[in-house]
Image (cartoon, rainbow, N blue to C red):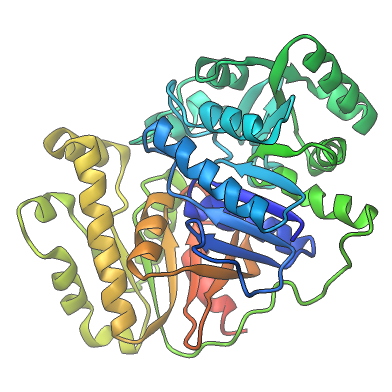
Length: 421
């Protein structure tokens, strides 16, 4: 095993694994820290945690446990993956986890680079852009759990880190690998331990990855990962593979579960409904009143599932989300929806669904835990950052775990159509 990765949510883990597979690394995603060594013959493992929004101390403890397992597995390099929109609060969790992993690995400096230009996430002079908008002016400003109101990542990361945070500006990145290495060395000599790195193109990501070939730890979104397989190939440790993304063919019914309230997912839900496909809304207020919303939704879906995929969605506008939070509390509203959607997923599998699309990081985490999924084999890409995956075992289930912000407007339709080709 060459690369050991720790992701702070389940869809983010799949996003990272997707980039590794597309670059020729056989990759397995585990749900939580495995209890035993893996039987699979793979080049990379991504340990998916649900640690993005928990207390910083708990996130650190879980991440260190994942690191310990990956070290025992013999990994040569380690990767801490967070969201391309740097989702966090002034208390963490990116800074505290990164510093704890650095200390455990004896890393003197580590980069911080959530850029993913293919998905319109770029960094310039330390400022993160979502498309043409600064992060603080994007839909992330209304995120129900981690609203991002500052686009300057140096400032954001410094607020949650003990160590000094510096910047590798795009002028150095554009000059290539040697200039990036030189800038990192200068920052390290000046007492900087975490360095935000600018990137506006995939070529930048490849140069950054090459400059970090000898770093014990990389902290980033999924973008930097596209250059890591080539590092291992140059070192003679990885051979090209054409079968890295192969998955089994699984017959059965299909459904979509959507808990994300991002702008992208709102558009995807709207597209599904506008195209006349069956959809059932999940209302957190009804759940709070004691209604068994999951059972009612499954009953409403009834025999329709046998003929067409059904969408179950709690996706809502920022105004509706804030209204529900005001009535129920932020944490309570989210937990109620996650529990209901997880129960719906269990009911769908019991009714013969074997192909399931799940939108939203927190929702995906709740669903895979409810289904008892231990590991996922990563398969072909649907849209940048989102592949199909397959559970392990004699009766696999195909899962597409989509980050809320990812995917084209027709993503739900496109993802299911891909399995028919």
